[in-house]
Length: 373
Image 1: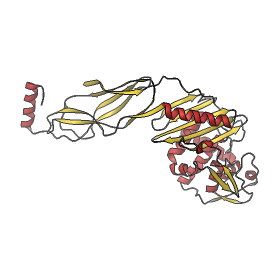
Image 2: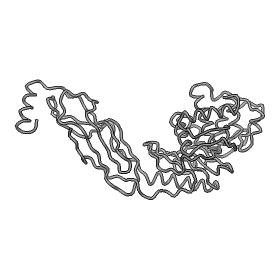
Image 3: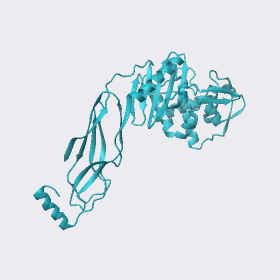
Image 4: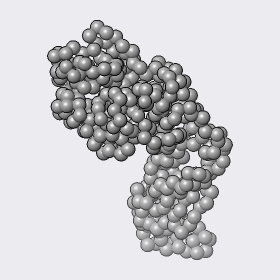
C-alpha cells in the first residue's frame, strides 16, 4: 500500500476563534450545504415554542398536498371555535368556507390562530387530533424532544420543543416541499377579508437572502424566530428564542445570520469525477490512468485562523490492468483539525484494457532494468 501524506495541502480556515456572543437564551444555527452546526446555545433544552410551532402546522398541510389527500382549492368550514380563537387572526368568518391555500397564507404570513384551527379541524376532525399528528410527525422527522398540544402555539404547558428540533422541522420542510416553501414563506404580506397584514418576519425585507420561516411570541416563551436564508450555494437555518422584545429578536437574528455567513465559508476540496492523481498501470495498453474523487467534498470552516488541512491518498501502486472506470482503488482522507477525518472514495478515472503478452513482457523488462515502464 502506497500512502501519499501531505500530497494535497489546503490553506484553509479552522475553528477556534471567538464565537458570536448570542443574547438569546436558546439558539441553533446550521449550514445545510455541509450539515455543519455553526452555533448552538441550550439547543437541546426544552422551551416554549409559541407560534414557532406553526411551521409544523404548515408542514402537515404540505404533506397532505404532496400526497394529493387535499387540494389547494379545497375548502374547509369555519367553526365557531376557530372563529373565536384568540390571539393573532386571519379574520375568517364563522360558517364560511375557506380554501386551503388561503388558510396556508393565513398561517404563514398572518400567523392566524383561527386559520390554524380551521386547517386542523378540516384535516383531522379536531385540533387535539391534529396536534397529536403534529407530535407524531415531529418525532418521525427526528424532533424527538417536541410535543404539541394545539396547532396555534397559544399557551399550553404541553407545548414543548427545542431550538434544534425546530431547525429539524424547518430543514425537512425546505428539502421535502421546496415548491410550497418558495411559494408561501417569502410572502411579505397577505390580504384576506379586505384586511392586509404584513408578515411578522421583518428579516424578509433585508438583503440577507432570508426567505422564511416564522416568528413567535408568548409571555412564557418570549420572542423567537425560525429563519432560513440563502446566499449563493449556502443555506443557513437558524432558531433563536426567549428574547425580551421584537426589537431584540430582530437585532439578534440579524447579527447571528451575518456572523454565520461572513465568519464561515464553504470550501469545495474535491469535485466528483475530478482528477486527483495519475498513477502507473502494470500490464495495460495505457501506461498510466487518472484517479478521480468519487464524490464532492465540501467543508464549512471559519475564515480567520488559517492552518493547513492535510489530504492523504491511500492506494496500491502500480495498478494492474485491466481496469474499469468507476472502480474504487483507494481512499482520500482529509484531516480537519478539531473536526476529525473525512473520507471519500478514490476511483479509476477511465477504462484501461490489458495489453497483449509481448507488450506486458516488454514493460516488465523495462521496469526491472530501468525502474519504469
